[in-house]
Image (cartoon, rainbow, N blue to C red; front, side):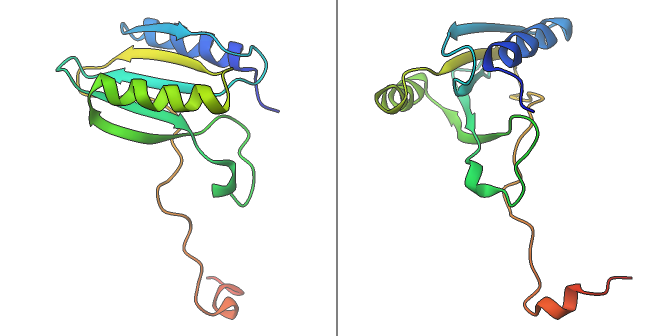
Length: 128
């Protein structure tokens, strides 16, 4: 079972503060199931942007929320444009802003590369 967006965002912000960081909710969306976007301010004029990982990426559905890094080391205006496009499709999204000088944020991120399957399915029948 997946927790609500409201619960997830609140817990994320509290965890960041508990680790002596700073985080703020800059947009509240649907409490139950709004998409959650994360903006990471690297404090050098650049930003990283995380969005929900597409559900189609997984053979088995994950239990919790997974994110994918959408933009890296970008300008604030690029993120604003991306969020404007998102608002046209689904206006019930959340935005959490986190300050992290090195860009390191502990988020559940989906693997970039899907699990490699053997060319011959019989090769995976017996593994020792």
